[in-house]
Amino acid sequence: MVDPAGKARGLRPASCGCAPWITATRAGLLIAMLVMAGGVMAWCGPAQSADQGPEAVTLAPGTQLNFDEAVKIAITHSPLFTKSSLDIDIRRMDETDSRFDLAPPLTFTTTYYVNRPEHSGNSKPYSINFSTDPYNPLGAYFTLQAQKLVTQAAILAHLQTISKGLQQLGEFYLQLDTLDKIAACQRQLVQVSKEILTYSENRLSIGTGTSLEVQMARQKLELARGEQQNIALSMKRTLVGLKGFLGLPSTQDLTPDFRNSSRQVLGSFDPATATFDQAKDRSYELKAVELHKQLQGYNIRLAKSKVLPTFVFTTQTPSPLNATSSSGLYVGLGLQIPVWDGFKRIRNVYRQKAVLKQIGAERTIKENGLQDKLLSISSMIQEDSLTLKNSRTLEELAQLKANQNDIRYQSGDAPLTVVLESRKEVLTIQKETLRRSLDYNRAVLQLRENSGDLGHTYVDEKSWQK
Figure 1 (spheres, rainbow, N blue to C red):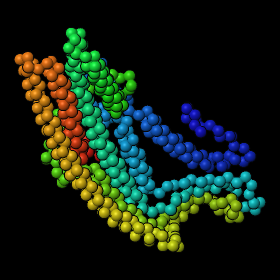
Figure 2: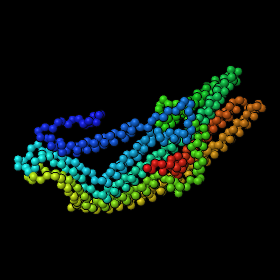
Figure 3: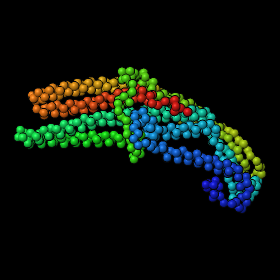
Figure 4: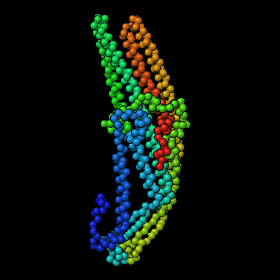
């Protein structure tokens, strides 16, 4: 136990002949205490920083974040990336542990005997022993190399999490842009519904309309207003989701710049240029499988090294329980050779080789899965593109019809309701076109992520290597 001043507490003064033991083991105890204190300090440091987490982001009032600026904040502060980022730190600490395991662990043991045999030849009431655990240098080396690959695999997992997260961030911006445009259409729909209600009330007042027409117009206006409120709630929910994704505090005002979101999020990516070979080269998942294959190679070497004898080392003083009167330190070296283990170590070598074959099959499965996914997304993009094209054609047709009805109204050939209903139809189809455009952009964004273009654009994989 160590107080803040660094002084040891809880050790009672020696008595009853304990002074020789205290003098002889003082250096060893001091070393042990310093090692334990250093270990506690080293352990507490990372734990405290992990608990504190990343610093909160504060934005100046009125700051507008475009997609690229939001990406920078998300990579360093998004809670979605915290777990995988900390996993890299944990693996690097494991790697450090393996590096120190290249030297055999040394254990210091001291024993003080309160009572001893009367005819003991050793006058000292204590014994000291320095010893190592069974040490396998090849096994320690292979474990370190394997741990390095585990760290690299953790980095790839983190980069894959970032790539998936950036796809989610892009969807936030695409959805906000679409909702904003749909809200503008809905405001016009509400205005047209008001004009229809006013027209119906005027017709009722002059005796050319009925109260049923007025009631229907009023109900349609309420429906339009209800839809307007739903769109506003969806916009609010999306903004809250974006704020939480970026790791911003709940009190932080956020004004995302989502104008031309498709250009911001998709950039110059062309779905027609996405190839399977490029996706394979950039796939974090396939790179992780390759690392797993190399890791299994070291596991095989480690299993083989366990068949070899291990080294042991010890240095100790004579035991006070012996009748000899010798003194000093005695050094011993030896080998530890398991005699019988039911051939478990031999079978473990074959077991690790079988796992290596499984990893080879796993890579083939993942490559086929990636190819199927790319083909599926490409088909989805084609379908969404065709649906969007048809929706735009219907919008143009409705606009032409609205222009025709407006001409008829100006010439006195059609009532005002025909013109207003045509406007409603155009606005309704425009809203549908915006939704179809969102579906198309989402599919393209998904293809950009699966092809590796999204992660490759915003994350430098080499910068994570240390």
